[in-house]
Length: 627
Image (cartoon, rainbow, N blue to C red):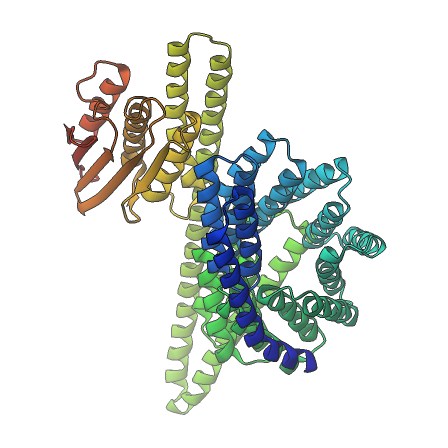
């Protein structure tokens, strides 16, 4: 209680102090002339805001990216890319996080910064865990550990061991996890790595909980909470440790104390725009109310948790929360909803190929079958009670009702069996389709790599350029298949996200990231694959042509893409640049020109070109109705 009261009292002071410090640094930044000093000030501002307001930290990181890109500072660019990726990750914008982490890793490798590569690899692993890809995440952490060992970075080695310990805990390899946790604590204390104290104690508490050493876990979390206070680590760290303390108290059966910690942590998470914290604490408030038998109070928390995790594709704990929702509905006698969420849990488990042990999966399956039998028994008991109420009508009426009951049970079981088999078949088909798209994407990446290898052996610039364009065309199709197997809808592609990834890839292939700014002036729009692929190839040709011809001699410019669905059968696409006005494609005779013309005809469309203050290509497509 004393710690909670202290956190509550510190909360307004922390916010006021943070804003005052940021305002002072902003004034300092505005008056600073030295470019390197400016970068250092922005970096400090990002770190301060990160602890207390994630959205503010993201805006500051974007400011650093913009400034570093403007002056093309090779040392600061990857640092700010990494910062922006970190903010996107904690806001659970996982695809955006990956995009910036990839750019950061590329930048760090270019300047041979091993510490930066390791730090970024840690963050990539975190995103992979959120997507349920634990084996790949562990590979990233081991890679980072080797990099830290190669430069003898004690703090980095300690950080890596802590993260690997967490990976092992998730795989239920608890003795190995404890070994890594203890090594991390020993290294931090021996080398006085104050920056690592909070993380090593928090992780040790997580391992202890997994080993059901709940009081030991609480002791570790309390030590970590004291570190947060001593080092003034900010609201996000208060959220994390308050949530962990609540977990330990929950395991100890001290539910009311745990709820107070969770409630306070949720309030701070919302104040600091800490989306990952909001999702985690909301889930725990649902679970603890479930444990207390407060099913009506638990349901809104658990449904909100599932909504947040589904929205953000945060599947790390989604299976567990599906099970919790199923249990709550069962306790509320809503058996249909309970079975629906139970099926969701098993479908998701199968789709991500979880690396948890077979014994654990068997345990979950046994639990599910037991619960299903209990539901059937409850249903039968309810029917028997109803029969007793009408027995006074006579033996004839009872016999009639009994016959109707048997018929209803047989019909119910037959329908349930058919529905389960159909659901299972649909799930298998969906997994098969995802695997097909995954393999197609992998094969296209191999083709792209072969083209890149062949291009590297060619000296003729025109031939080399043609190879690069061919590689980009293959990549435009590959990205479509990637989006299909990563998404939740196998029948459609979200075009804004697709165009963003495609455009970034094309700009990167021509080294035009600093030269050309991309503007996607469009809302989210889902289209089928037969429409998305030709549109992607058209955009590929137009961007390629514009980059090559619209901005000569190092000129910078902007390309704007707008795509809208005017009704169910009409698409309107506009691609505009502010270049020299000679980047038109409609009057050309090359392969790209022919390809755009054929693709436009394929989509039953028309195209026109305008050359005023740059070049504008306008397409109108009349989509055919599905058969």
